Length: 159
Image (cartoon, rainbow, N blue to C red; front, side, top):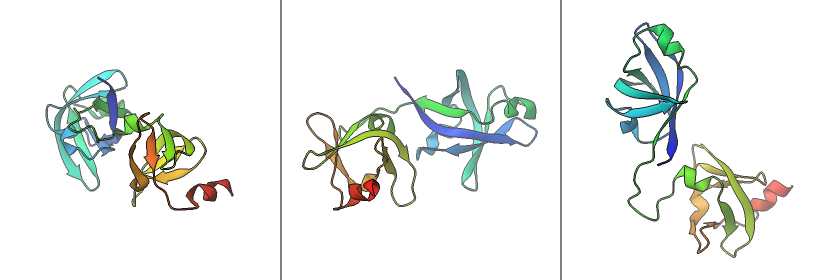
């Protein structure tokens, strides 16, 4: 099963081996005690976590000192992908690398990344275009991502 990015360890917190984590998922259960994560090639088990402003303070089993916590700073946290309950669900790891076409079949490029944005996350295409996810209407028979964008959206990128 593929591992998905679920967060990032920003820095050590305090003297008892805790770290500050920014989640990149809406699933806060990823930081529940007993949850298994991976940082690089190192498996980690969440011992405890608590919300702190817009981030989390987390302690992992086996990390009891600030020095141990500092060694984790900057690490990307990954976890197993959850099981999909609907074939209509799309996950970021499925979007990256997918071909994007308009409703009429006009090809618009490949998704290189999904960028967070307060109004709507954006598909970052290899052409440089940014397409809000709100314009994604589904997949076609070839599993391409179909977007229904307002007139001129792609022309903005060409100017």
